[in-house]
Amino acid sequence: MVAIHQVCHERQLPLDTVLEAVEVALISAYKRNYAGNHSITAQINQKSGAPQIFVEKVVVNNVTDENNEISLVDAQEIVEHATIGSLVSIENTPKHFGRIAAQTAKQVILQRIREAERDALYKTYADREGEIINGTVHKVDPHQVILTLGNIEAVLPRAEQIPTERYSEGQRLRAYVSSVAKSSRGPQIIISRTHRTMLRRLLEVEVPEIYNGTVEIKSIAREAGYRSKVAVAALQEGVDPVGSCVGMRGTRIQNIVNELGGEKIDVVQWNVEIGYFIANSLSPAKVTNVMLYDEKGKTAVVVVPDKQLSLAIGKEGQNARLAAKLTGWRIDIKSVYEAVTEALTKIKKDPEIRERVSHRMEIFNMGKAIQEDKDPLTYTEPELKLLSEAIEIVNIAELTAKREKKAKVLADIQATKASGDEVDLLAHAEALLTGKSPDEVRAEQSTADEMADSLLDELAMGLLLEDDDDATSLLDMAAESAETLVKEETVSESVKITEPEKQETSTKPEAPPVDADLMAKAEALLTDTKVKPASDVSTEEDESDIERERVKKKAKQKKRRLVFDEELGEMVAQRRRKGNRKDQNWHDYED
Image (cartoon, rainbow, N blue to C red):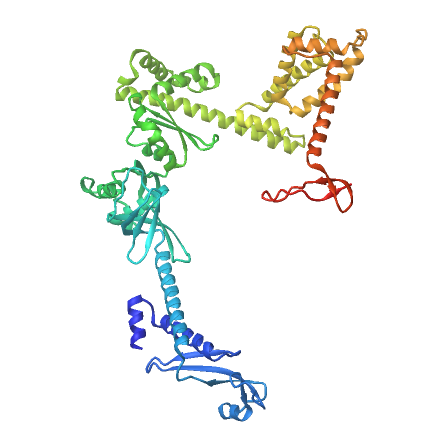
């Protein structure tokens, strides 16, 4: 028992696990010397350490196999109610197992202890999946880095390494446990330095307000090694979430930046209003307007001052890309000058918008004057505020007009259904998408259908076919209109249907038969290739067939040779078949 306790202490294993391993080893040693077909169990007294082995034997009248059978008299001494054919468990502990059996027990104990160690390590690190661990760099390879975590190793693959970092042996490193899997050699631990959850765990370590739940991390967007954005919100009034994460003079966030190898981290405040959240996500750029379009698949058009356009987009679009990941919206960034130009164009071309904003025309006149007189890079704060207000007015007018049109279309559908008339769902659906009325959509469709039908009718009737250029242009026009209205199969079917009509209505005399040689020469002139007469072509085809047959016959003859067979007393043809490359012998006879 002293030895068992020592093993438990050294291997960090529970006592029950080691005792179970020793008991299994005793059973294996017993079976090695005393073969038995029935159940064998082993027990170890934890106080004295004495082992006991119990064997089940069958109760019989005449014992022929002492290892598996017991007489009825002996069985009733142990169990009073024993009967013939029943099983009785008796103690049969041998005094000595022998050297081979002891060696077998030793191997079983070692194997069981190793398996128990692997299971214990797996459970330990499986519970730590999703957390940060500390390790020492043991080996650096081009494809991976091996870290030592005390009594086990972890793998940092190339894809999970920060591109700007360089690792050296003996370096202390913190990493995120991304996955733990079982294997024959123990648990396989994969760690990561690029996972965005690693940034979350580092913030929980450095910022007590996040750890105790006062400040919540809403979303994280990260490009490892370069830049990250974190959106935070306060769950308690009076707490500044951004200030809590940054710390006094940036000490808290600076510790995380140093840990991640100089990666820049922007902490922005989360907001329930998605417009304000998108404006905050583009920090440090200043945003003047945010226009949301849910119909286009969560798209936001953001307007920024001209001098901050490059700051909002970021290096190679990094700032805008991270903001889109952080918010989950597609972000289009425009300058104030471009947005004002589009707003003035809409007022000029769309009478409905112009009517809606007519009571605020003085703002647009002032905006147009500012746009024409000043450089966009020199706009002042009051001027930016006025231009922003003009953009917002046009945006609200446009959205209101679209919503009213959609409401009108839906009302028309409901009214049509209530009256029992047939509803043109395609026209109404296109009206909802384009903002037009169903009547306008149907009028455009009917006009396009009439144009396509007229073009196809002219083509089918054979008009203008005498002029090749006119026919080609007519074909092109018909194809273009047909592609936008009907499927290609329908067009092909309509053309096929009208071809017989063209033949019936044609009043031209039937053309005389054309010589094949003349047709070949005509094709040669059109394609700039040499074409021989049809007669020559047919002759060459016959000659080529004869030549191929002759080559096949010659190749077949090469595989045979004539030899004199002494047994038969005559000449025979010997054939060679494909066999081993080393043994290309002639065999098999043919008459």
